[in-house]
Figure 1 (cartoon, one colour):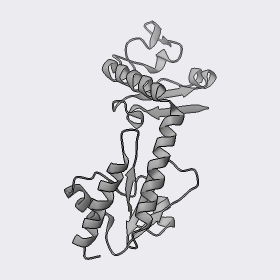
Figure 2 (figure 1 turned 180 degrees about the horizontal axis):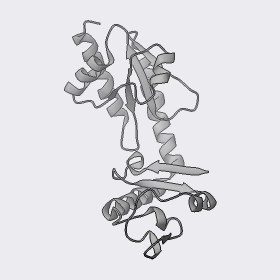
Figure 3 (figure 1 turned 135 degrees about the horizontal axis):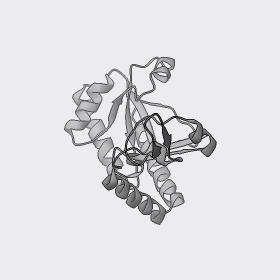
Length: 190
């Protein structure tokens, strides 16, 4: 019935995205916010809303962000989704092989057709400590429950370290990450 995505997930600016909904559902929904351009007619006792999508677009739109999102979409189309996916999968496979060679590391989740993300734990270390040491070595990762606390409960984990890859990453980025992780393991005495 609905489809939504965030601009920052595809190299666009933050604070902008897309919500697509079936017209009949959008017509039935009340607006969540009031402002200019979302009203078709105002009377003293009542108002009529504009047709979707305008009735959900009150006030001044985030013009710069929308232009940035358009540029990001143009960039992705120019690169080609199959090309992006192939590149990200090559990086994922390489990083997975490199990580799997470290006995202190346990990869969490290895679905056959997963996206370019690897969650892992370091045996004997807290995920925040690993993330901090990697940060000090200039490597950006995410740590914590990643908005999936129920999955963490299922796996009986307080959290994981997560690396992700995009079109802008390279094999040398993976090598730099592995070098930094090995140094972090030494720092932790593991």
